[in-house]
Amino acid sequence: MIECSQMKTLILITGDLATGKSTLAKRLSQKIKALCFTKDVLKEILSDDIGFSCRQENKNLSIASVDIMKHIFCQYAFLEQDLILEANFHKPEIIALKTLAKQHNYKLLLFFLQGEINQLFQKFTSRIKEQGRHPTHCTDDIIEPVGFEKYLLANRKELSQFLQEKQNPDFSVTTIKVKDDNYDSVFTQVLKAVQNT
Figure 1 (cartoon, rainbow, N blue to C red):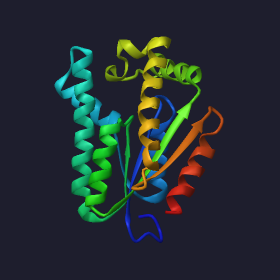
Figure 2 (tube, rainbow, N blue to C red):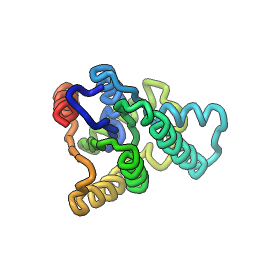
Figure 3 (cartoon, rainbow, N blue to C red):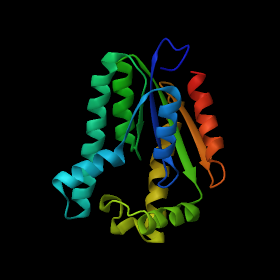
Figure 4 (cartoon, rainbow, N blue to C red):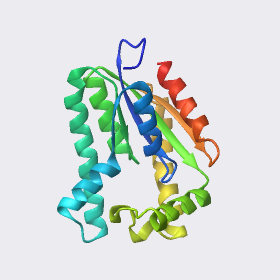
């Protein structure tokens, strides 16, 4: 549990592909002793059991993975403990989680990670080539530079516009710039924000 916090906290980690969201979420989980779920892991499990044959079915696995995360939060909230969820969340998903957090008397912290697109693409493609990335993360529309950039910019625009609407007083948002040499700095910044809530 986060120390000195009367209200429980739901921590969302989101943002650009290949910014280290999952690594950050797991590291934060260990530090503050909070349970953590990542969308990629849930999606891989669903894919291994169900499979997919086209981009739309792959997207459906993503939607189902986030739906599972929502269900997990609703069940876990009864334990009144902090929880970390990591995914490339979209506006409707954040709105739904914000509503659920309010219903369960949870504070909501959102960390929005962004990086330099060319560097992120190099990191993303090296994961595919060197780490045997799961097929659900290797769809054709984002494994080429133009598609990758288009995907990232569209997601950034959607989230940035939403997060700026009326400053979203119901939850705290921290946008963080990620570079190859500042992952420790990112973790320190996130941990400080969490501990100060």
